[in-house]
Image (cartoon, rainbow, N blue to C red; front, side):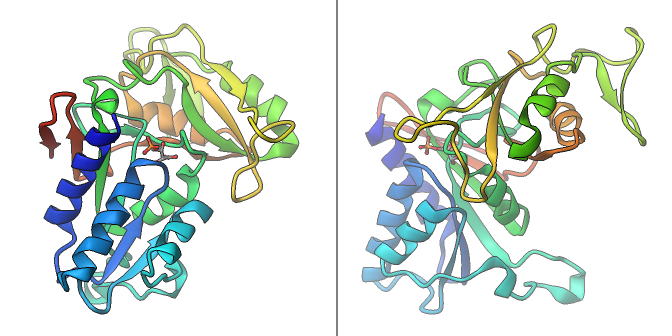
Length: 268
Ligand code: DER
């Protein structure tokens, strides 16, 4: 698995981090570690833009950047790349891992509890490039990743938010004003289960729940297969107290997978 992560990371960096790239988003997790290692190799070969700055997506990501001797930059200190085109993007490309990627490049992210800042950075990027091992490569989200959709929430109301998420119905739809339950014939099921199950993510080497870099909790929301990622994302996001949903619908432009046989696959 590690070799497949490494191969995907190298291929993605070599294809996307050209000397023209001046602002690079660095994701979080274990796969992106190989991407940073590749950046160091390219820098030592003078193949990177000498003015390259890297934008972190978590404390871990910030540590990776500084340990690699790469220059860091805060997202909010960066100017828009093309202000005359009214584009707010300030990052040329972001390279990040994923928990699962479907055939349309929608992704589940947040296995490392980093998806809030990851989505901020991805959204401010011209291109999001995902890197993953073969275990993450699916047709439909929910096929392989069984831990549920990571949802960052406000700790003070976690039980109430959990209850409301578990009351969502597969045929719920998002209207202009609020998430309502549509009549059976109006929308297809957005997800597989009859109702979601939301579990508060417990820490392993700390008593009690995981607390994110932003001081919030994570609910892992199991819905089975996700037939309409965008609708599921919006349904959950609209619940008061939900801060960010680990569904990246229609954001990624490219995904690189290391295959079990050592080959590499790129989906665009
Ligand atoms: O938290 C995240 O979204 C991470 O990108 C993560 O889920 C991917 O982690 P991995 O590269 O360790 O599989």
